[in-house]
Image (tube, rainbow, N blue to C red):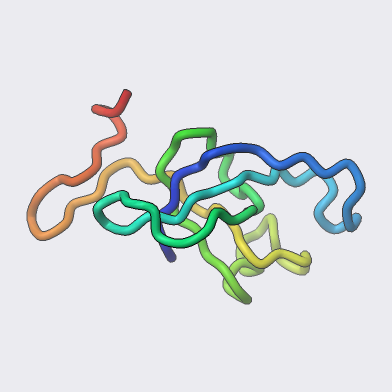
Length: 99
């Protein structure tokens, strides 16, 4: 699992039938300091996340382990919306205090 921030949506009107009806989001991986870490990715949203949210994602074969993505041609999935992050004894992210 890795951290990312949702930075946009991806709409594809023509796609494999196994991902029809799945919401695709553009995510920007980040490190523990919430700085960009790599290139943006497209991920299937398995949890109803929205733009600007800090999420956890899985990639590779692990991306096909959620109920929503099992058996699909998916290489990246949003599988959690982060509420808080406690790192080395300090709260470094608290969703309730964002915005």
